[in-house]
Amino acid sequence: MSEQENNPRRDFLRKTLTLIPVVTVASSGLGVAALTANANADTRSPAPAPAPAADYQPSFFTAEEWAFVQAAVARLIPADDLGPGALEAGAAEFIDRQMNTPYATGALWYMQGPFVTDAAPQMGYQLQLVPQQIYRLGIAATDTWCKAQSGKTFAEQDSATQERILSKIEAGELVFEELPATAFFSLMLQNTREGFFCDPVHGGNKGMVGWTQIGFPGARADFMDWVERNEQYPFPAVSIRGERA
Image (cartoon, rainbow, N blue to C red):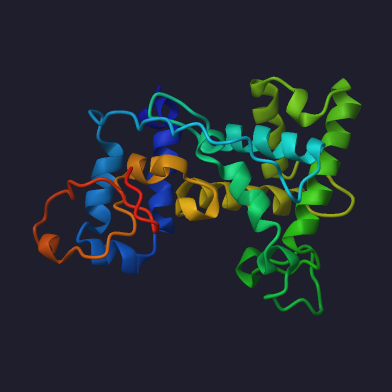
C-alpha cells in the first residue's frame, strides 16, 4: 500500500497548503518548502485537542441540518493520529456563522443571468443559487436519498456509509432535482477547509489545531528576525486575538 493510501489526511493537508495566502507565507520567512517539510515530518507530535467549548447553538441550520453538517465535516477531515479533525476544530460552527453573512446570501456576488448549470469549470460559478440555498437544498436532497435507501438520514448512518455517500455526491453519481450534487459537495468541502484553517475568531480552527498541523505561525506581527534564516520557525501559532496554540 502506498504512503498516500496510508496517509490520506496527510496528503490532504499537504495539498491544502496552497490555500495559505502567498503574502502571508512570504512575510513569515517560512516559504512553502519549509511548511511542506513540516507537514511531512513523521516525528511531529499530534496537535493537542482543542479545549472543550460551550455547546454551540446554530443560528441558521435546523436541528436536522445541523446534524448533517456536523456528520459531514467529521468525515471530510476526520480526526486521526495526527490530531483533531474538522468537527473538533469547530468547522461546523464556522459554516453556520458564515450562513449569516453577506457571502451566504450572495449580496456580494453578481447574481443576474444568464445562468448555466453545466458550464465548464474554467467559466467559474454559474448557478442561480447562493450558499444558503445550496446547503438547504443539498442537505434535504441527500437526506431524502438516504431515507429512500435505508430509512435513515445521513447523520444516522455509520461513518463508512457516510463516506460512501459523500463520494457519490462528489462524483455526481447522485442526481438532485434542484441543484448539481457536485456543486453542493464542492461548497461543503471548501467551507470545511476554511473552517479548519481560519483564524479562531471566526469560530473554526479551535486551539489553532489546523495551523499547528501544518506549521503555520498564524497572525504574528513581526517575522523580520527570521527572514532568510532558512530554518523552521520555532514558535507556536498566534491568533488575531493574541491567543497562542
